[in-house]
Image (tube, rainbow, N blue to C red):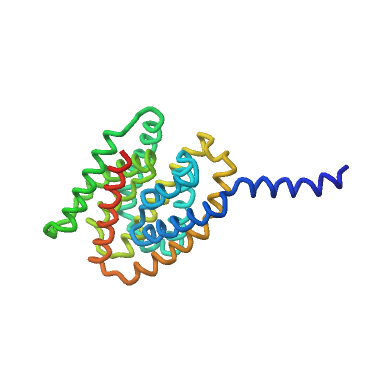
Length: 263
């Protein structure tokens, strides 16, 4: 009897895990989307939810996309920070992180109580307008005041918790404050790591991560995340500050368009 259980249990567990994974066709589609999304993430430090979500929606339940990407984004951001932690701007982090945590908690609460279509549409128009001005408008020499850390951090945390896409707000602030590309990239990754950690903890408390299928899918997509991050890092190393800021503003514009299309 005991021998039978020893032989049967591993096979049952293996069958359950295999059954939780997406089909091969869906896995290839999702992996391709995530490689592209994490190339963008590796360059700009955000954008995975905006780039990958429309494709992932064809292969998995929409309600699982943001929680799964929160896990992958946290892994990607943590890897960046651990390798290059000294490049982060600690003064900006001290200003932004408390606002991000507060915004994330508010966003998590609003997610459960509101239908924020109007707010999302307004944010989309603002983001598109800012990106167009940054790409085509006059290049001002002055920087944003550090006081802007509070609204940008809070709104980034709020929209990250609600829609999985608040990183572009951190990018708007940081590209107007920091001069070095590596400092912008690593500071952005640190902020994304903090934001996604808070978001993942909210999902954990809500019981979202009890879904074995979603966890198995996330684990199977880690190689796509790593490949995209590697490619994005190689591209970033070849960019000047001006080119880097231009790429970030293009991604910000696409993010704004994606928000408008989502509404």
